[in-house]
Amino acid sequence: LPDMSVLGAGAHGAVSGTVRATGRAEAGTATLSLTGRDMAVGQPKLDGLLRGASQVDLALALAEGRIDVRTARVSNPQVQASATGSVAADGSSADLEATLALPDLRALGSGFGGAVQAQARVSGSMKSGALTLNATTRSLSVGQPQADSLLRGDGTVQLDLALRDNRIEVRSAALNTPQLQVSASGALTGEAQNLNVDARLANLGVVLPEFP
Image: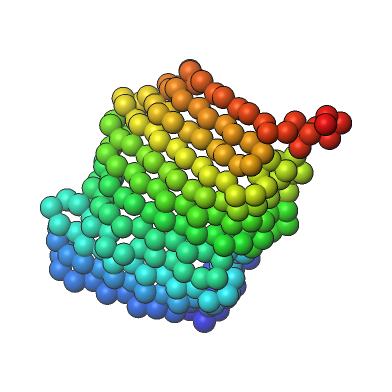
């Protein structure tokens, strides 16, 4: 597709690639390889991440009711993302690991900055599943002065959730930067929230300059 503007308002750039499928619906493989150039879809933050040359690779295998995600990868100067694992063909369960690297959040637009690297895993089903997330950050900024002050420097994010019969158990959740340490645990059920939260500021003057 040499000119993506035919897709509608806001779209531009170019994309080309190949798709290959073998086997049958119950047991087969599929591969996709796409190369894009300055792609845009009319969403400023997403468009910023798609700037320049992008490569998308996907390799799937279907057997015995499960989709094996052998390769799922997006790569360009602004974002590196990948995933592997398996998903039930009916979407009822999954076991996936994913990584994400955003080396310069200024690509998202005005006010954003810093870098993020993250690893996540999803396993189980909606009735009994788990999600873990571990990330490192560097001098994050989101365009809000007080938040930016708290996020300065090197930081870490950690999340460990379990899902049991529509109840989300927050086994642990934590955000740590040189200025701020926040941790939480508890459970979420429908509209009910039962969370224990602990937050500590190294220096109150970071958000309230009148304090020493």
